[in-house]
Image (cartoon, rainbow, N blue to C red):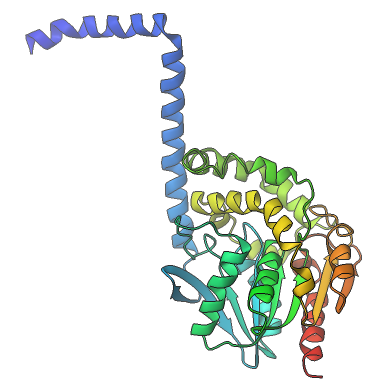
Amino acid sequence: MTFQHARFPSFISDCVFAVRRYPALTTVAGAATLMAGAALINRQLAKKADRDNPPQGQFIEVGGVRLHYVERGNGRPLVLFHGNGSMIQDFESSGLIDRAAENYRVIVFDRPGFGHSLRPRNAVWTAEAQANLFKEALSQLSVHRAVVLGHSWGASVAVALAVRHPSLVEALVLASGYYFPTARSDAAASLVPAIPGFGDIISYTASPILGRFMWPAMLRKLFGPQSAPEKFAGFPREMALRPGQMRASAAEAALMIPGAFAAAKTYNELKMPTIIIGGEEDRLIDINKQSVRLHEEVKQSKLYRIAGAGHMIHQSAMPDVMAAIDEAAAQTLH
């Protein structure tokens, strides 16, 4: 002990000397400490979010992927795919599931990496890869024909499902989708968080903090020109801000433009009844360059432009979306 006490002042002196000689060490050490602390806090918040929002549906395993889904109602199958960064609770809070369940067997999935579904890292989860996954999931659920609705990124999954497995999709409803490659600032911003390794560090440290800070502005962009309705308060923000979900969100944003390049070559293969619906005031996408153009390419499609509505059309104009589903389903009966 005497030796250690004698060396302690010397150790402090060496540390002070190192800090003065190499000030960058202090910055690096401080940043590392800050990031470790942020990661620990984000991990605890994610665990709390999972505890506060337990699964409300059931699980199915497909090819090693554990998927969470909610099934409600009876009748013709209706499958709903949510957008990027979202989950089942988006459709739940909109009231669309309850309304549709009055006449349909509604099946809503948490897509891979969102809500309570897993997103294995051994695959690139393009819209096409997800379409193949959901085809097998629906087969396990004894669904061989269905009306399919996709919102935003989910519309890309719905299109891929219809192109790859046309016998499964008897009618399509595409809401607020992104179908053709155009410049997207959100896609560019997601390139770094989507990088394997480094992106994980960002997703587990800075992204959840920035996400909380940017949440009000994001809602204004998604819902504008309207404000987020009171019913959207049922959407669990903290689930969306978990590091794993933010990592999945960044990956999907990075896939948008290349995905649209590939998908644009397949739209002439869509032969089933197709309803395209979009908000006239969508601040996230230009519906003239997306929904209107898709309508021109898919000859049997119908287009509905909802005045005063933004990107979250199923939230702000749920009855119009429900009417689009009913119309698409009715066309398959002739």
